[in-house]
Length: 373
Image 1: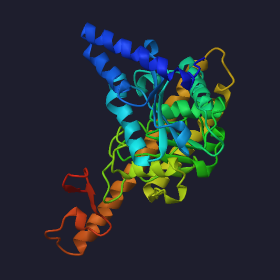
Image 2: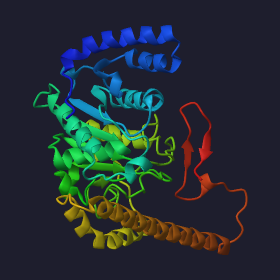
Image 3: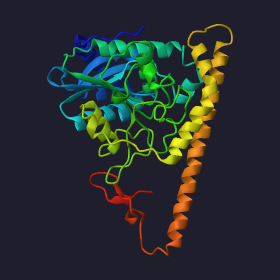
Image 4: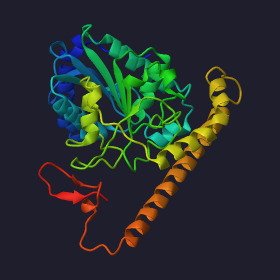
């Protein structure tokens, strides 16, 4: 079982990383050296297990803040750690203010989500170890009774978080999952959280969030919790699986509101009729497979893997049908709106940003605006 390194080891971890950096430079290993330089740039190195690619970086001082966020990243390589996960932690740290952010990459992640989907998620040893490790790490943090700790999980990190909540007693104030392909459960009750402390985000066009192979989709209206809005006029657009922590995005702003306990300021996603219908269709199609999931949690005999894999395929097909229904209704709605505009008369010299209810979205703080597609 993975156990969390105590904070006292941060100094020794940093010294070990410096030695490894010198060796990497001497050997001409530029990629390894770049990773180590990023890990040593700032913050405390709480976890340093390079033989397993396990790392934990703390930004800020635990003893002087009221709020703590533990960021659990998804699948990837050292390049993702350096180019995506560490910058995401910094973006959250800088946006939240007076908040300590800890990047916890303390598990053996699969090479990609597709590989993980081909494995038996319920009993996979790697997932069990990862979930136990996350729960142990959060429990080891020296926090006071007045401090809050929010777990912010992205992609496969949300699968790990779900398993930690459901089966390993992960205790935290609130949970945010972004780009989540499932949490190994069928509804929020199995995570032992209430609706007011569970938040989700799903950006338009995020294919991973719609996989539906690790349990029910958390952004579904029937799952429970609060789905937060990711895009609004005047914000940097979030359109991809890796963009939830973009500075200037509504997605990051909402995550910050949760981490800092300002739940009332969260902008809630209002599902369209197409989304609601698609979600209900997917849920209804998955109902016949629910008994299989219940059996799979206790049965480990012959045919177990085939049983679970069959359920995953059925759930994926149900999710795809639901998405197809949603997309079809969306297209129909846009077609009706287009016909309505045409019947009102020709439209001249008008851009999308001038259409009532639409606005321009900024691509960055110093960049020119562009119209919302």
